[in-house]
Length: 317
Image 1: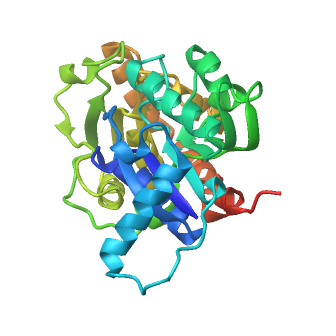
Image 2: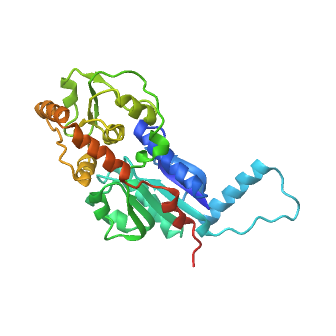
Image 3: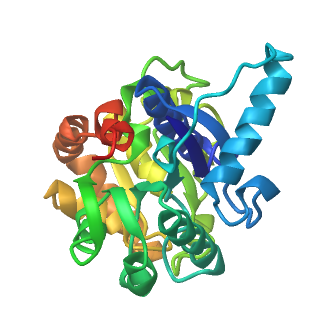
């Protein structure tokens, strides 16, 4: 089975890179040959994917294989391929919300691919109601959301397989085994999302900065050397949670941080102002057990694996 991977976030920050690494690893373990990777932010595809014609895609792949393998024996014919041999797997992180132009473009490509008979999957994604009409236009073979609020948006969609899973950065293959980059002070601040209403509230604090700019496993290992992490990044919350340390969450550009904490069922306060950051910091230092519970809860959540992807490769009736 050939897979085309859309919205690869391998060029992003540590959490985004880890999520894409996990998904690509799961695809390969499930037996998929990833023949093309489209990167997040781009709204262009190569000509051989224009229109998502299965015959054109297979023709390009045959030509590519013949160049790689050298001349074929005279009279040798390639086995006939079918559109069911192709699937499109889209990583939903960072794009599929808010009815943005990037989201509209991605969903239009997925709709066209499904109309051409290709199997279409959307994984590790956040969804909101602004995209409902565009999501309904796609026939989904697999849809995996990363919070219950997003998962509720899938009920009215045409979906064969649907799953509620933790973010793919929770895959132990991409977060365990790191080495601390340094010894951090007790309180460390990260960053806030530039599109968040709370963007910049950490700038008023003079704590040492530590962001998601190293391999994710090393970020997690380094955070274990501090006592509290202040962050407005979704993967910053995941990093602190996987590290098992207290954190002060700040709203991001979507519901993702709040939805994750509500999903855990724990009363972890979220800071929306400069003063609330200070209040939540004191609270976090006084309630470390809540964050140990969050750590244990996070480790118990399923994440996308090859088992979830195997139905994409099953032969059609």
